[in-house]
Image 1 (cartoon, rainbow, N blue to C red):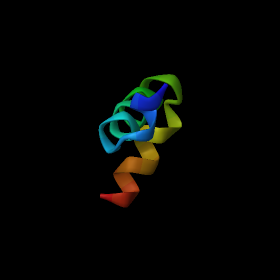
Image 2: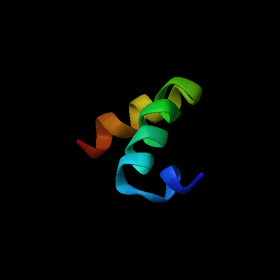
Image 3: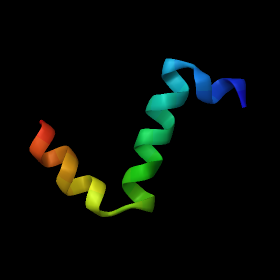
Length: 32
């Protein structure tokens, strides 16, 4: 679980959240 505390872990979680929550794709589109 310590992996999730690192920056790489956070990026990993964010990348998966895109697949888990399709609405994240639209959110990313607005942020970019």
